[in-house]
Amino acid sequence: MIVVELISGRTLDQGATVEEKLSEEYFNAVNYIELSEEDFGQLAVKEGERVKVITEFGEVVVFAKRSDLPKGLAFIPMGPYANAVIDPSTDGTGMPQFKGVKARVEKTEEKVKTVKELLEAI
Amino acid sequence: MEDVICTFCGSVCDDGEFDLEKKKIKKFCKLGSSKFAEKQRIKAPMIDGKEVSYEEAIDKAVEILVNAKKPLLYGWASTANEAIRFGVLLAEKLGGVYDQCASVCHAPGTLAVIEEGLPGATLGSIKNRADVVIFWGSNPAEAHPRHGLRYSISAKGLLVKDRKQRKVIVVDVRPTKTAKMADVFIQIKPGFDYAIISALRAIISGSADVVPNEVGGVLKERLVELADIMKKAKYGVIFYGLGVTQSRGRDRNIENAIKLIQLLNRTTRWVIWPMRGHYNVVGAGEVPAWEVGYQYAIDFSRGYARFSPAEFSAVEVLKRRDCDAALIIASDPVAHFPMSAVKHLKQIPVIQIDPYPNMTTLLAKIVIPSAVYGIEAEGTAYRMDCIPLRVKKIIDTNYWTDEKILEEILKRVEKLKG
Image 1 (cartoon, rainbow over the protein chains, first blue to last red):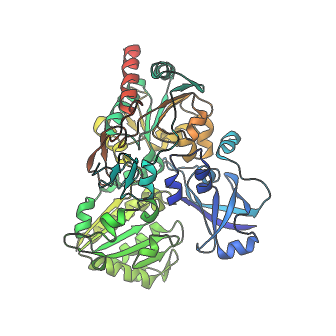
Image 2: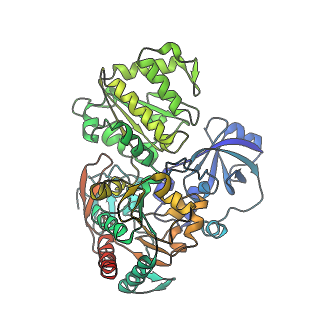
Image 3: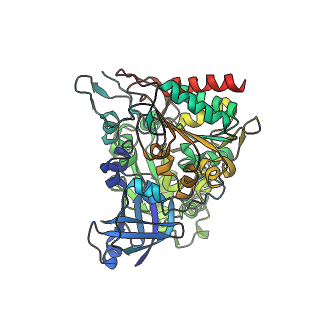
């Protein structure tokens, strides 16, 4: 298990599939977490294996991806997987905290839900 | 067809070439190409998943809206100003809440602008004049792929002629694709934008001695170098993105950045501008601003417009369960809102107007498909720098436009409400 600071954001693939949200391509564009080399190594997972991301606001299973992020920082593309774990409080601004949420990440055998299954689970 | 206008991101590129035979767009980026590619559509209007006529779907939608005590009307960033205008009138007539996608995107910047004003410029002016360009918490290489080519990185301007004459700086928490294109990359700790902006203000105003050796993961000497580049610029710009508006500090980060720009303007010329996301998210704020004075989070339940993001932004309304029906247009809050807000959308009747099926379609009681502006319908949109562009109709369709659907809904609501 590792502890990271989680951010979400746009990617080119997320943008290119955003008008096809029920497609396999969109699912693949938003269902992963990017981790630094060190964090990836510490989790002892292989590229594409599943991890569970847990915050005080929820948990979600996603695929693990290696990236050049600095240690301790993790990224999930904006979308339903990120939104299962980000901080919904807006501090009076109307804007949830989509970036900068403490998260635990651990290896899991649980499956990655489809976007439909994610909605059903809410 | 030439000079086709893209209706994907806030850059609203206006130089596309559409091959009418092959139905393919040339010149646009991956996002623009995906916009113009054929994809799955909502085939017909639906009530509870059963296909019906436009008339039947609109009648049922009107029944739900008129009987609701406080409907939420949300979305608006990917439609034309003409449709948004009817949306604002409808929200007022229904005594509902009008909110738009910026409330989970760039709206904190709007709050800062209310406090401080916005020293801004058009993208044309920036292309021609800016010799220092800073992208702060913004990654145009992935979110606005042609912005750099047309306006800000490798653009050929009148006075600043090419990439060599322009210094590009990226401030971000991670080495983004844009950071790899920059002359200077300053990697900061997440949530420390405010502190770093304050440090830059202190250095530029001659109080460098109060700045500690390291701020938000950045050594003081690097901040002194950055401040020096900023002071020496002839014309500088900060383009800020969601890295600033969606993290700790939100609106206060932008307010502080505008104060930094004000300070720099005592000795040179600097501007600041948000990298707006959807092609007409500016219109989703400007149109209600002309109509009722506010850009988002507007409540009409007392018969007049009240603005309060803490109460009337869609996320707050939904979390509080303070709406009993929702009309969602040109947006997908089910995919983009936190779970605790989506929960209430599952409990109330949802009317969706959109060209494409998305996660909101999965829970909508009524689904009304619409034409795509810029491809199947013409209309007016504001580019990210508030320049209005008339987007074109390039192919015929049987789908109704958002404008026509909303006009019909409004007519019937007016008839019932008087």
